[in-house]
Image 1 (spheres, rainbow, N blue to C red):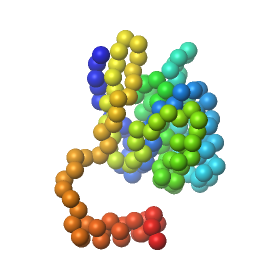
Image 2: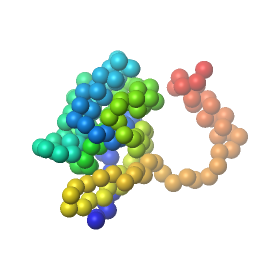
Image 3: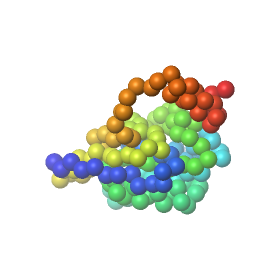
Image 4: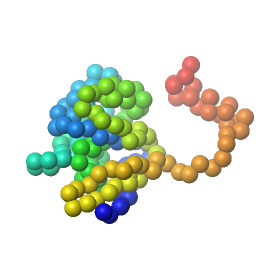
Length: 160
C-alpha cells in the first residue's frame, strides 16, 4: 500500500465539501438537493465512479465550479468520493440536506481552508483515509479573540 497526500487545488475564498457515497445517482441527488436548499448557490459536483467504466460523473450550474470539481476529482481518483465546490453560499447551508441523501456515507470536510487529502493506493484502487484541514493549532483564544470571533460571525450574517 502506498500513502499519498493529494492537495485540493482551489482559490483561497472558495468553499467545498468532500464526502463519500455509494451509488452513481449521487450526482443527480446532490444537484437536486443543492438547488432545492439554496437556489442562488453556484456550484459544481464531481463523483468518482468506483466500478464499470470508473468515470468522473459531474453536474452543476457554474462552469468554473464544475471545472474545479472535475479536476480535483481526477486528482483524487478515489472510488465513490464526491466533491462539491460552491459560490454564493456556504457549506453549512446545504450540509444537513446532503447528509440526508440516502447514498451519502460520510463527509470528510466542509471548508474553505487549504486541505490535503490522505489517500491510500493498492493494486485494487484508491481510497480516502482522512484529511488535513487547515493549519496546526497555535494556542487558546483570549478575551479579545472571543470578542473578535463574535463580531465576525455577526458581520457575515451567521449570528444576529
